[in-house]
Image (tube, rainbow, N blue to C red; front, top):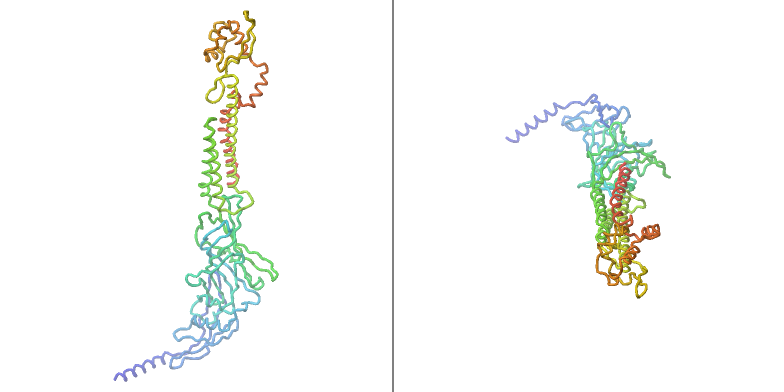
Length: 541
C-alpha cells in the first residue's frame, strides 16, 4: 500500500514540474550601479540562446553578450530558482584564463591611493623614526576582471588574500620605510573587493616604521616632521600612474581618531603631495604623506625649568649671610652648581648628540653662569675679608692695638718717638713707644689741660684708660700735651693713603664686603629677569 502511495505522489510532483516549465526568452533588466568613488561600465543586455528547460527540470544553458564590447562569453550556468550568477561561478570563470603578469592596460593603469591613520604608536628622538598603524587603500580598473555581463547576484565581490595573489597588483611599497608588515590578527588583514565593471579595491592594514627629521634648536619647544613615501616598485608612471585620491570629494589622508596624542608629542598637522622622481629606468610617481608633531613641553617645565629657578634663588641666599659665613656660602654655591649639572645631564641623556645649541642648552648654561658668578662674588668677599684680617693682625702686632671680633683694628692715637726738652739733672729725656709694650697710651689727667685742640678726641681717648708705666706718670703736663699732639697728627699725604686703601680693602674703604653683597642682591635678580624676558620672547615666538 505504501509503495502505491509513494508512486502516486512522485507522479503528481513530476506533473507539477512539467506544468511550470517554460521558455526563457526576452531582454533581462539592464544592470547599472553607482558608487561614491566609481560609476560602473556600460549597460548590458542579456539574451538567452532559445534553449528551454526540459520536462525533467534540468538546468538550461544560455550565453551572455556584451553589446558594447561585442563579447560572446562561454555558456554560464544559471540555477532554475533565479536569473543571476553566483560569486563562485564568476570567480572561477574570471581566473580561468587570467594572466597575473599582464598589465590590465597597455596604455597604463591609474592607481588611486588613500590612507587612513589608525594610530601613532611611538616617536623616538634617538633613532629619529616613528611607528604607526595605517590602512592603505588602492583602487584601479582591470578589464580582465569585468563581470557585469554575467548578470551577477551581487553588485560586488568581497574576497580574501588568496584571490588577491592570483590577480595583477601594482606592487606598491613604502620606499623610505625602516620596517613594514601586514597585520595578522589572527589572519592576514587584507581586503579585496571587485566591482562588476572591473574596478579592484584593495585594503591593507599595515604597521610601518618611517623616518623623522628632528631639529632640536628649539628643544623643548621644537617640532618633528615625519614622512612616508609610497610608489610602485616594479612599474614606472608610463605603466602605473600612482596618484592620491581626489581631495575635492574625500581627503586622501584621513585620521580615524579625532586627536592623536603621545606622552611627549601631539599630531598638529598632516598633508599629502605627489612628486615625480627620475630613475635610470624611467620616471616614478612618489606619493608622500607628511606628519608634523609638536613636543608637549609641560614635562620639561616641571622637571627642568622650575627646579633651576629654585636653584638660582637658593644661590642668592648667600648674599644675605655676610662675610663671616664663608663656609656656609661656599656650600650653597657648590651645591647649586652640582644640582644644575645633574639636572642638565639627566635630561640630555635621552636626546641624540647634536653639534648645535638647543634652547635648553642656552637656559642651563645661563643658569650655570649665574651660579658661577655668585661663587666669584663669594671669592671676592672672602679675599677682602682675609686681607682685612691680615691688616688688623699686622697693626695689632706693630702698635699693640686691640682688635674687634671681625678683625678690624680699633683706632687709637698713634705714638711716635718724640723728643721733649725738660730741665732735669739728668739732661734731656726721650719719650716714645718703646716702653709701652701692649698697653695703649692714655693719660688720665691730660684732660685738665684745657687744650681746645683735643676736641673730639676726648671721647676716643677716654675709652682706653688704663694703667701706664711710671715713666709717663712722672711726665709734666707740657710733655704729655706735646706727646698727645704728635700722636694725633694727620698724615701729610692724604691722597696716597686713600689710594693705598682701595687696594688693601680696608674696612674704611667704600668697596667693603657689605656694599658688594648689597649690590649683588639687587644686581643678580635684575639681570636674571632681563635674561628671562629675552629667552622666553625669542623661543616661544
